[in-house]
Image (cartoon, rainbow, N blue to C red; front, side):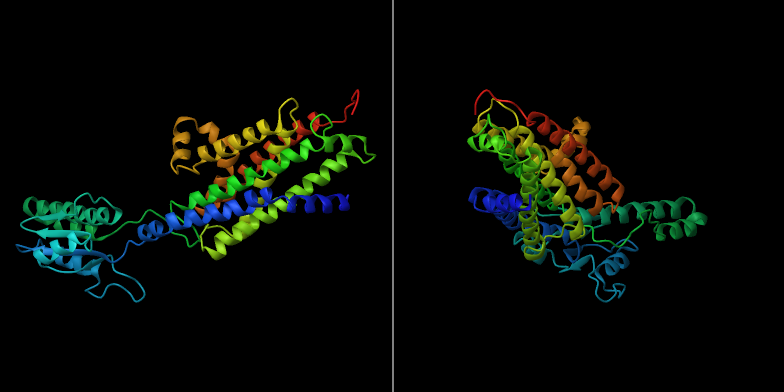
Length: 384
């Protein structure tokens, strides 16, 4: 059996198409993802030192200057090693407008009896939204305090004390989570690489049936145990598939520097599971008699890419659309389950969801392999 595994490995390594699709393709596509999304992710993750201008045409409302000094670090409240939220570039309107036209300013804050905001035309990014949120909060609190001072002065001290007290209902835990929205494409890339291994699983089934290939006919008349022969082929397929998947993962994590937000041991475990489900799917489709190899290849390609499309490989929001319209499909889609294995650990730090996804994937593997064994069981032929 060991010799059989050895020769299966040699045969697979000599197949250049297999080597490309299982290792070369994810490396190439991962590089393209990195080039396309890398700079976008970096810019959207940086929410400090937002460049703003403060133009005062009248005296600022009480508390406004103190707030801006605190947020820009001018009052010394920002500790060493931290960046302030705002960087106040200028207080001159002409200079501010010139900088805004050059794209070097996120917003202009005007103080003219009231506090107003101006952003570049067509801009609606996260940084501009942060500035607007800060000003809205200040204005709402200022109106509450002003109204209380005019109507009920005796209630002013507790209102001011309550306004100064910030209540945080979110518990923050230190972990390696990556909230970059673009990392899901790399999760889907590994899921696709796992399912693309179905091509090898298909030929593993075809090469062991006399009615599907000439090699299958030779295997049928050999004295070797058919079960051991198929098992050795599956083991060799899984070994080579896992090696290629892990090489691609090393390239993504340690060379491109993609932060998956999970321990690398989890990546290896999920890679193994995705290769098992991919090879099982290929073995099942390959075991179906009456279909030509080209049709089986097309069917597997459509199935693999279709499942990955629905899990968000081509369009990141697709999985959420499926979740809203047909959530059950996300619970049985192997590609979505593989992606969710990464998400559950990265975002939630919860291994319970990971285990439930693994159980569902193992059920899929058991069903596909059982179906394959039934279709490839020992048969009698009139002639071979």
